[in-house]
Image (tube, rainbow, N blue to C red; front, top):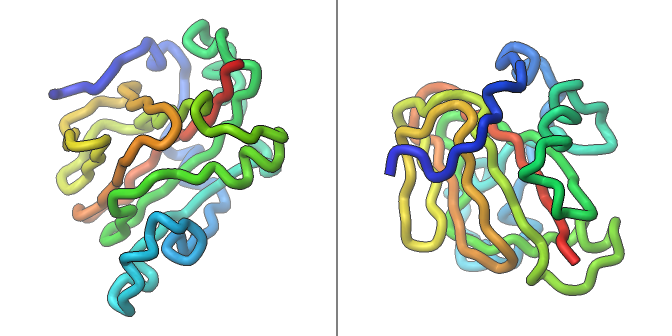
Length: 173
């Protein structure tokens, strides 16, 4: 599949240069997500995880424009954040616990949490995403993947350039 889903995010003007300048911080995901418990081999240290730029950091202005699009109208809560997956970084197949999102918004169930990953750039060689048993590549800027609740997914950067995505976590009553 060339594009998992496409919404006209390209009518929003964003610059990859602006995203690259954000103050990303590395999160060693293998230490905080129980889904990664089977990956506790020393080879994974520094590889499982990604660089994040989340609230309360100020978001670029185009993020508000994206959140105001009709695709997000049905959600009461919409929390954005950016991910940078550097070459060699991986997020093996896992399920998100949504711990900080649920705590911040006093949510107890995971079933009504929706996750959108919007690609901030065209696919580059070595950039892959997996949702359940499907691998996706060859996406273009503005394509996105979406899942709900405890869906298994993974991301890999086996290429030579950084991979940038905007993650929007939503809640629907």
